[in-house]
Length: 289
Image (cartoon, rainbow, N blue to C red; front, side):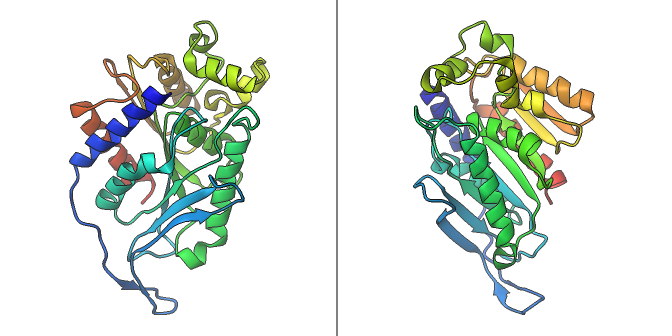
């Protein structure tokens, strides 16, 4: 997964080239109390006792209780990575979608004593509940979107499909996220992602457990709009993960978009990268504004 992380950093770095506008720091007033609302930023906000249980909060100027919130979820094979890996994507959203609040999260990383499931899903739930509890202080809505990369995309989909008890998620974006751990491409070909999970955590490999942590098996017709991006030559996430997920979303009648870059791996550059941001930006404007 270290190689995957490097690809994703490259992915986000090149994305940044395409957008260079200044931050919006204008001032408005809260109609309830006439207090000017300027841009607000809080880093490493704690939501638990673990050092990894922190997030960065970026609240736009001119916000109101209708301001939507985008949650960024980093990758790293569930065992590594940091919210800093998503900073360039955060900057793109601030530049191109300046009316959206951003929450860039860390979550507890898995090790031999702390398996990823349900620990990391629980962390997302805690974050969402905390944001909702502080909704009036932050001056944001309780409508959330998710953008995840790799393992973070898996967590974003799984939470939005199976653990969002109040239907707070209004859209979810998966960039090379695993979707189905019962896929023969995982089970029959010694895929490094599944093998890492098994060897590191000794996870239950029964079909029931693998289905319980697979967005493909947990998605229902009530799922939020979903946008998917995958690489045809990805050595970590088989192409079938994206193709089968797209078919499942179609069969369930869920609003979605799917893009497969045939010659790309676990990340991409150039025209394909510009295409990804163009589509993701438009999807967000449709479903989270």
